[in-house]
Image (cartoon, rainbow over all chains, first blue to last red; front, top):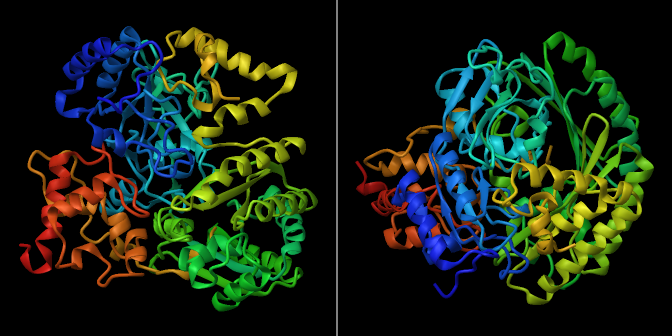
Length: 520
Length: 112
């Protein structure tokens, strides 16, 4: 018991009483409160191993069990941290923001209901991308996933945290259509058309009647999502495109200014991601294969790695999906646009229905090998995300790149980043690779992150998603009208969850009474 | 789209999912089915775990190993090690993890 961290205000006696009641709902075998259990829910990539310590975990199997657990938690004042599968390791994984919070592990909720005719699915939070992929293939259902490159996570969790995929359905949160949510008082609500008990349109029309609430439960702590509808992409007739490499760092700006109009026009249906050399190289090689010098890699080492693997400084894969005639009309337009930029290399891609499908998220196939990048430093590697939102401007992206790259060098870190298109925005996703067995490096990570966040804020950029350590810091950067958004979030939180039971601190949202727990 | 996806193993989707199973909290844990449901995404062909293990041990796929100890597999999975994150009990219960460990420890020659 010595290693237990209790949340503010909870006594051991009340915790014991709560545990007995939780066991009455989910069964003793689905309560996990011993030391090994607790450790297994810690933040694998933590910068500070003393932070974000869970008190234990509860694993319900149904929405009704979730409701029962939440009602007890509200009565006994035991905060819960819902996770779907907890695989977003760069953002905190299974761990809670506030030490002493009980993880509400929804991994056992794995129901899948596909509507083949309408190309939709209703899933529970424990359904991973591999589970859904297996289900579709095993039943010969010609629908494709939109999956992130590291695909071991939950379909719902990814969409609710606004993760992305690489097909035309890649903005996963925008493909949500109807939720089932357990509110902080245990009430179960369905959004959109699901608010009508017999509606056959829950997964077909997002908005229902009156306010539409789906996004209220994304990146929030206003409820526990127990089911979500999602649109799936009908298998295309063909996929065509090209993989393009660019030689110089300064090629980034013109590339963005070329792709932006094509994306806004809709000629590119999927969001391209421009990745730097290390985003690709860290998957297939380790730093120690090239140098033993500390600090940021030199240009000479970077050039040697690029030469070995035939990589540009930047690279992008463009894919177009659909009818062969249409794709054949689009392809030469894209090819000319890229060729005009004088790339280092351009490799065409062509797939037709019936041909073998490569293991690639752009083809709707989940993968895990991109996470091999965690081994870049060998030993106990890890990464943390830094992901500001930019306009689709080559000049602004180059400015952001130059400043960020200078910070990496200042703090002696290797630069791994991408610029991922949305329909109107760019996400500058940085994966800060670190070595947990290098105390000197680990001591630099927190000031480095804070410098990056401050730099972005000075340019008017906020992050779209962040690690547990920085949720308050990032929320603070949303500062219009003296942080009116934070006040709104807090008013909603106070109204729905006055005891602060659901995910305290998620996205920097606390009840009025919990504000002293903020770290900003 | 990451270029890494073009550099590493290209596998047929059918191959990738061969033997995939869909067990859900089976009353009698089936180690093989559970391995494919919960582990093969990383430790099957083309997975992260296989790729990283291949840097220091052959064969890298756990199902092809004949020298795995059940207790070792259980502890490794539950505690995590190196670049592998811990697998918490909500994702794989103790009985399920022990069934997986026993399946792997039996080795390619010892399984039915």
